View 1 (cartoon, rainbow, N blue to C red):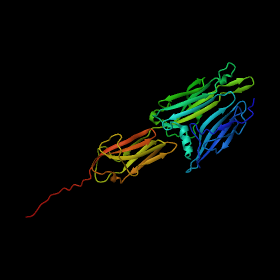
View 2 (view 1 turned 45 degrees about the vertical axis):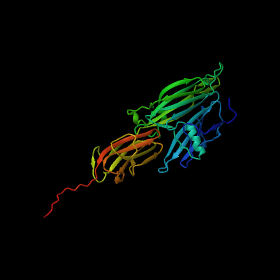
View 3 (view 1 turned 180 degrees about the vertical axis):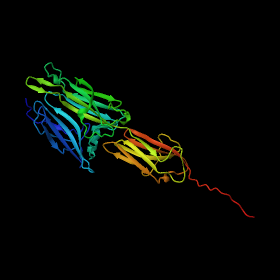
Length: 366
C-alpha cells in the first residue's frame, strides 16, 4: 500500500534543540526511506522554525526525518554537525515526543517562542546540564490502538535510555553513537504523558563531578510484520541531553596568612571546566572568608563564557592594589556564576600592611 500524498512535516523548531538563523549555521532536513535506507536531503538551509512538504513520497514502510545543524567555525573553517531531532512516519505507527527539562532550560518551547517573537536567533544545541544537577524527561505518546484486530505495532512502543561518555576533555564531536550503553528498556501501552526524573546523570566516570557526555532517550515502534507488509522497529523520536563537568579553580601567587607589604603580588588564576554559560571573576573584600559576601571585582579578572562546550582558562593579575581601601585582613575569592547559582572555586586570606615605619634615634646637642 502506498500513501498517495506527501506529508507535511515541521522543522522541529519547538523541541529539545532547534535550528538557528545565523551566518555560521546551515540547517537541513534529511529523509531516509524504509527499508531501502535511501537518504535524501529534503531541504537545505531551512529556517529556525516553520514547515514544508517532504521531498519524497511516504510509502507503506515509512520514512525517517532528521534535523541537522551544521556550524562553520569562523576562526578555523571547521564544520561541526549537530543532530537535533529525529522522527519516523508510517501507517499504523503511533506518535511519540520526548521533552527534556533542565534547570537551564525549564521550558524550551516557551523560551524559543519568546526569542522568535523578539526577533532573536535561538542557539542551536542540545539541552544541557551540569554533572551535579537533576533533570526530567517527558515522554508523550499518542495514536496507540487497543482493538482486537489492530496491528500489534499500533498497540505499544518501547522506550530506551542510553548513556555515552565523551572521555577526559571530550566535547562529543565525532563520537560514534553506536557505542553508547543502553541502561534501560521499557514498554508503554497507553496514550498520554509519562515523566521521568533523574537526580543525577548515569553517564559513567570515576569522578562524578567531572563527567562529560550525553544521555539519549528514544521512542521506538514495534516491528510490524504481516503477509504482504514488513516494517522493522523504527525510531519514532530520539532526543539528547549533554552533561558537562563542575568547574574548579585555584589562586596562586599568594598564600593563606601571608603578610603583604606595599604592593600586591602577581596572581595566577587557573579555571578548569567553566560552564558554557557562565561569568567568572575574582573579588576582594575586607575580613576573613565568608560565603555570600559581595566584594570588589579585581580589574582584569572577569571572564564571560557563552559557548557550546566548557572552557578552561588561566589569567594573570597584577597592579590591582586600588581595590584595597585600607590595611588589615583581606580575602580574595574566585567566583563563578552559572544558571545553577553562584559557586566559590577558590579563596585565600592575607594580612595587608602598607604602613611605613622608620626606625632610628633622635638626639640633640646642647
